[in-house]
Length: 269
Ligand code: DGL
Image: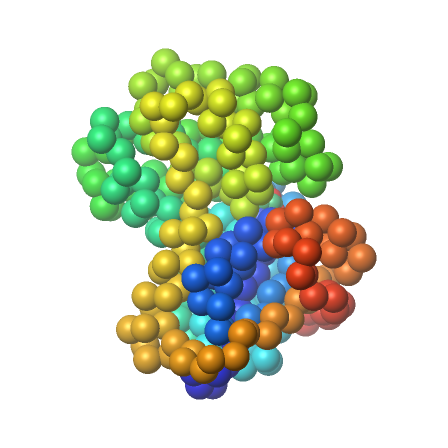
């Protein structure tokens, strides 16, 4: 493992490509290996024990590609498995929760922060804990939005149906007086316009993907592991099921230059 080794990024499926996109924008010379666990998605409704087990299986797979750091792009995996991945692996690990919490704590003026995510992420209270660790006086207001993920995957991010559902999920925040809302799920950056139009101009939306890319750069700099080559990075994609569907839907998340995905066989723990 050295500076030229790849950054490993994983998610329950395609959503983590929003995080990978930000990493490759900020660090265009870095090589990356992505694994989307499309055979076992969604993670958002599963237990901590299951998500921890899945995450360690994925880490073992990515370590075979000599990765120099691991990024849990999935909010649910970040909430449930990143603490144990950090202690269990010998390479640096980051999730998306701490970077997102830091950005939210920095953005709020009123100290009133909303958090949306999958059922698992919201149940874990990981964002609330991370926000309070930085800004103890902050108040958080949370809401699970389980219908958002399938709506985005269906390609309905801009559809009126999604606008109605967003109104229903988010109306509680309007009375809570929040000025900052954390988009605590890989898929929600694609709903930014819809969410912004429900929340209005006074609410800053925090996209953990961008803050996570900054965190990845900081960690690699600190460890002396930034790739200082000039060539554009190479990107490899693995999925545990249906590479074709991953590629078709993944282009919405990553852009047209998504390379062909390969099938990964994970070894069960
Ligand atoms: N990637 C998941 C997350 O960010 C959303 C999809 C799922 O439930 O697996 O929490």
